[in-house]
Length: 157
Image: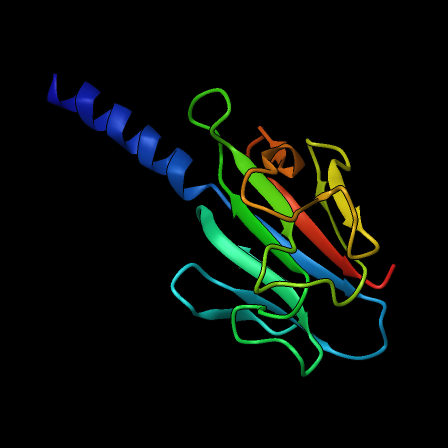
């Protein structure tokens, strides 16, 4: 009995350890530095690809043009949680936010890579309908219910 229990635990741990998500940037603006900030304020990337070995919860991304606060204040913000779904609807979710203190700064978009095809969103102006303008705009969230979802964030496309 102990051996069977250990085997089940080992398989579960192996599956959890295999989870990974990569966020990459495409900066077509010719200026600025892409930033990826983790849930607890850690700078995860300043332009290079970032791979999370496990879930990436509550990360934000923006193009630092010199006019953005540390948490993207004053700029177009991408918010993301990348995680393997454990129940229906519990996987990855990404959106663009223009909720103050965030504001449109540069054309910004994102899309998933892999099993979710190219599901994503683009925001090309301050009135884009694909971004949160107030907290009740939940229809702008783009979900991915596949394991190991990866994300590409593009500026000035």
